[in-house]
Image (cartoon, rainbow over all chains, first blue to last red; front, side):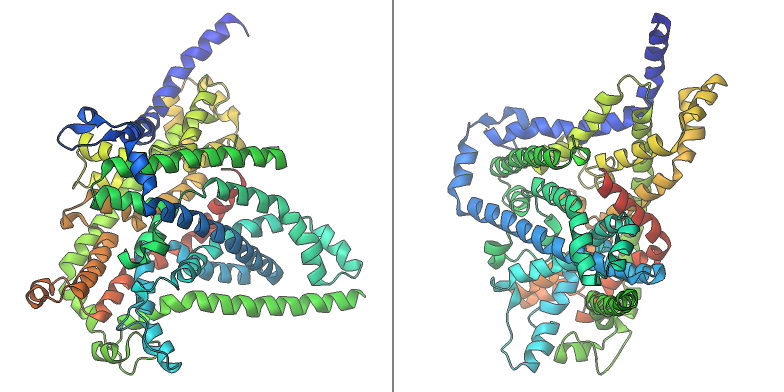
Length: 307
Length: 299
């Protein structure tokens, strides 16, 4: 490259930087500045003394946090729910995707997709209302119709912990199965049709085609999506765990996740130090998990690694 | 042999149709319960609860909402304003950030890509971000609290637009515009922004849906009910119900009753929150599905 050309290039990057400036500025403020705010986890935050004036207290926040029963409960819940979502969610999404593919007709596929995507468009607040219509003790559908028909005593759902893992998993599946199946359908559509035709000529039944061709061909997609989900296993869907159980304190043992804990600490208990410690714990472990998951993806399939 | 397998395919198609019909039916059922409950007579609701086959229908809850329309229209107004303003600003900033990243001759291209990408890997958490927005920027109880924090630029959207530029817009267009003496700003606004419309449609849809459905910014940054959009209004109604349940204080009941609609009105409110989405959705489904697939293929 000649000197002149290099100079030209440098000159041409200024206007481009200017165009990118608003976006850069926004990310700096919204995403990067709070990263330096992690020092709050090591402070005894006091509103009157302010962000920088508050006293340092070393690892005290963490020491207190991990001494509580909450730390164990929220970590366990976050991990176990995500694990259930990954396993059950993937199986359900693939099941739906395979069935959709077998439909053949585009108009029919579109029809079913429209219905299955509907829950994904609703906010968690609205979904909280829907769940409430089923579960509330006085006028809920389950107590008034289902349990009455079965001659079972009404259950106070919002204060009984046992059924909640089931309720939350069903709600999760209801909201996400449609949208997750789209991704798998796209990769089934990408399989060479000639393979199916050849198998058919050899007399393979549909079942055999699914288990011997479709599923093995989906393996890379499954592995990559699963690893990416494992990278996010320390984060929970705040809306699901906050709106659906209606923040019922009696249910915390089975509904508290790291995200809802941080919210409660910050907005209700106003314990900045403790919630900052929990948030940092989440960010750091989450970051390590993303790096680990990405390293695994690279081993499986370099093309699909994030970096 | 061939005949046999073809029969197999036909019965499989039938089986898939049946299973998917059942699934689709199950997925719709909860939404149907909410809709029916919203037009159920209040007395029927109190005696037999929310049910699919109410013995008496009534539109009272919708009449009630028309009477209370000021509160609801206001919330709609807030939600629509936030959704429109948020989406427009977001799309503009996002494409402006994505475009330079797509130019192979741009010096800081890789640096910028990493700068955007890193936000997907690590974040400072909500505590620091909450303190920054509320104390440094004093954003609490302003309309900007619903627009600015969290959603304006996401790495996902930036990469979606950048990839679109890289794969679908030929560089020769830019080069010929440069020869004609057009400035970079002019090239972006007159040529590149209009060319990005297919990807802009997808990210507008995602962003619009996020703003319409968002209640988290309201939860953190609003104490003034005047600024509540539809979602936060719904939360307040639900909280008032819970609050009344735990307090048996009758005098309190009197003061709260204005805010506490009947059992069927709650569901009518939920219907009102869903309605606009259900109306718009069929027209945009195509872009939505395309976006989901694109995002999954390469983030």
